[in-house]
Image 1: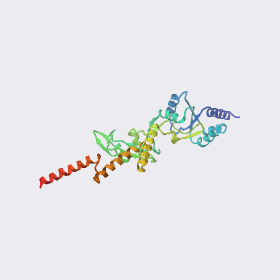
Image 2 (image 1 turned 90 degrees about the vertical axis):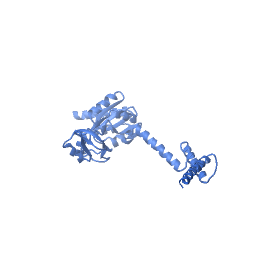
Image 3 (image 1 turned 120 degrees about the vertical axis):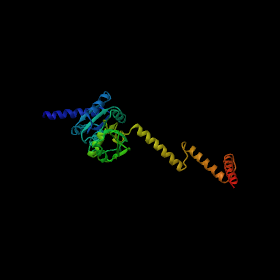
Image 4 (image 1 turned 135 degrees about the vertical axis):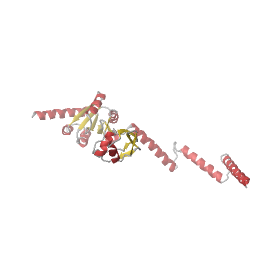
Length: 283
């Protein structure tokens, strides 16, 4: 066996050992991931996780020999795309991903990038001196004016929406304005823990997202309960108040006297009397 084959076997054996030694296996696409970001995450997570770059061919060879069918299927399905880094740990994958997100850096957009969120250029002083650059700003749809020798953006402007491809002109303008909308961190696109697969969609949800979704769900459930007149501990009080208000309004309209309607009816009668008095005085 040649030295190169021996080296590959040694690396595959090492990968196999890592895969079978940890409860959580996370896969990260390292495309455009800066070494400084990886090194910072590695330093912060020392003792909690191992971050290891691997070749997909060697990862697949190692996966063929793992004892766990779930892990073998997981690597076969998710472990063959691009440049991969393994994140291995005994921590829960979601908690580990949220920890990794803390070590993010902001990066500019490049020409050809596809945006996944709305990009807004805020109104205000750009700090750029008046000159030819103003035509570049106008070219990408930014409304401008000159004030005290500087270029100002006159209003908040959306320059890209989800799915848009960044043009060279827009990339250059965003760079000049020092707008860095890309959040770069060690981001897993798939993870396996205790036989359960975690997709990127699940791993990327933040605590704020969960709170917001829960709030919206509760609000929607309450609206449905009120619309369908379904009594719950949350809706019954609102339903009773609305029913009471409608009953009082009906009592007033029908001139039905009770402790709830008499005060309103007297106020209406007084208002009508005052209006009549003013009309007589003018006559």
